[in-house]
Image (cartoon, rainbow, N blue to C red):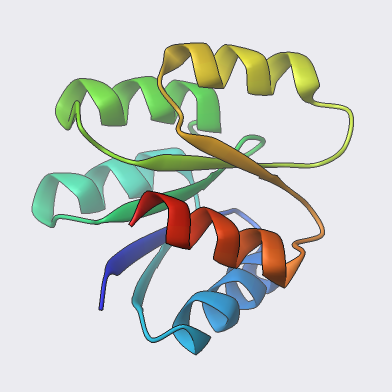
Length: 117
């Protein structure tokens, strides 16, 4: 069982992703924005982080860079809506390991989980 952090400002998106991940037997923590995610990462270790791009307080790209500075070997999967391809490219170049598109396709989420864990 892996410990996963799901970061998204939309509660329904966190719940959707959490149900898919827990369905595969993993433990899930949640954060509502990048700042909250960074605070959690400073207190606990996670095997994988699902990180939304567009959020208040600290967006996903800024959070990604801060997370990787704090924990250089962190495995981060960016979560994006359609039309954010340029940001995804920047995130991959900054160190994200993968990305998934909203609305989440359960098979694609599971594929990212299995590939990175």
